[in-house]
Length: 443
Image (cartoon, one colour):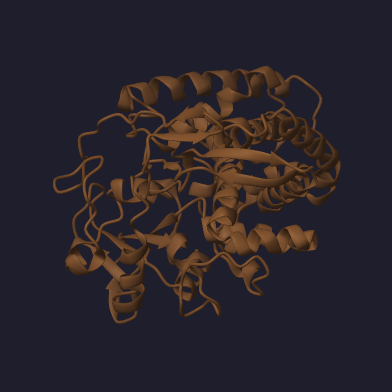
C-alpha cells in the first residue's frame, strides 16, 4: 500500500496512522502480517481483532466458517466469548427472531462490547418490544415516503453543488470532500441542526463507534466520554427547546413531542440521538465511498452503468450489498437455542455477520465477491438487517446514493481511484477514512 497517490505531478499524502497497542493478548499490531485462515485453528478465528478489518483480510476467515462451522464459538476475545452466525439464511432467521434473541441494552445491546449502563446504551435499536416499536414509530415520519419526496430536490441540489465544486484532473480525498460532506448536510437537515456545524454530527458518529482507534479518538475512553458528554448536553438543550416550540417534522421535534419519547432522560436521549446519527451517517457515507472503489475494482461494471444509467437503482442495492457498511449486529440469547447442531445457551452473545451473509456462496446465485450491478438478487442483501429492527432510514440511504450516481454520470467520464483506500480500525463499522481519486470530466 503506497503512502502517496500521484496524478499529473500532484501528490496526495496518505494520512499517517497512529501506533496502537493491541487490545487483547495475541491481537495484531498495526502492519503485522495477517495469517490466512488456513493457518489458524477454528478457535483462533476472532473478528474482534480490528487489524484484520483495517487490512481487509477477514474474507477467507468468513469463507472458512461458512463452509466448516457456520455457527461458530470464539471462546476468548477482548469482548469475551461470542457466537458468529455467518450464512445468509441463518442471519435472517436470528434477526427475525426477536423473542429468543434480544437487542436490549440490559442484556448487552447490539455490539460485542456490552452496552449496559454506558453513555450510548439506551435507544430503540437496543430495546425489545414493546418499547422498541413505540419509540421507533416516533422517528419514522422523518424518513417516510412523503418526506423523501420533499427531500429529493434538496438532496439533488446539494449533490450538484458538491460535485461541481470538486477539482478535476487532480487528486483529492473522496471520503472527506464528498461522502462526509453530503451525509453531514443530510444529518443536519434531519435534526434541524445548524448547517455550519454539520461536521460535529459526523465527528460524534466517528467517536462513538471508534473509541479505540487512535486515528479517530487518540484520547481513548477519556476523550470518548468527554466528547459524548458534550454531545449529550448539546442535544439535551435542543430537546428542551423543541418542547417549547410548535411540533415540526425534524427528528428532535418528533422526539420532543412523541408520546413514547417526550420523557426520555438524558442518557436515553443521547443513546437515541447517536443511534440516529450513526444510522444516517455510516450506511450512506461508506456506501458512497465503497461504490466508487467497487466500480474501479470492476471496470466492466462501470462501463455497463455508463452505457445504461437505468441500472442505477439496482446498482445502489448491489453496492450496499458488496460494501456492507455495518459489518454485524449482536443479539443475546434469551433461552437455549440449537442451530446446526450447536447449543447457544441463554445469555450468550450472538454476532450476525451481515458482511459474511452478503458474500454467502450458498445463497447468492452469481459470484458474491464480485460487484454485478444488474444482479437479480441485489435487494436480498442483509445490510439493513431483517425483522423489527430493519434500518428505519434505508429508503433515504438508497435515495441519496441514487442521486449521487445520477449526478456523477452527468458530469464525469470517470472517477478514478488512484490507490487502495485507508480503512477504519473497526469490526462494527466497515468504512473508509481516505480514498484518493481523480475526477475526469466529460468533454
